[in-house]
Length: 118
Image 1 (cartoon, helix red, strand yellow):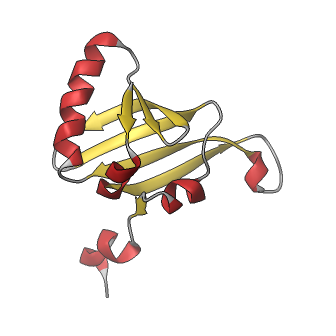
Image 2 (cartoon, rainbow, N blue to C red):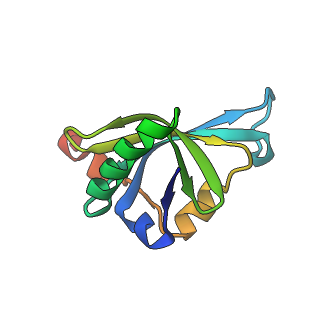
């Protein structure tokens, strides 16, 4: 399992958040049972993570990662053109708000769509 320290979270940026919910007609926070994230990794964490991922891949499948109190299974890891990670929460998970308050960043629309501004 790859452990991400709280200090390292500043080098991570959420590109996408997809909640998985219980079947319900009305959205409520308590309906969320787990979620998937696409995370962009920045230096120096990106290089460190790539090395740890290669080592962990030999020992466990799927490779697991822990941020705060949440365990994630790593669905996909790509190193080009940027370090991009797709993860799914397992079991009881911290809220998105708790992750952001601890230092995880959310990619802003302006940086994401700068090529498409009118």
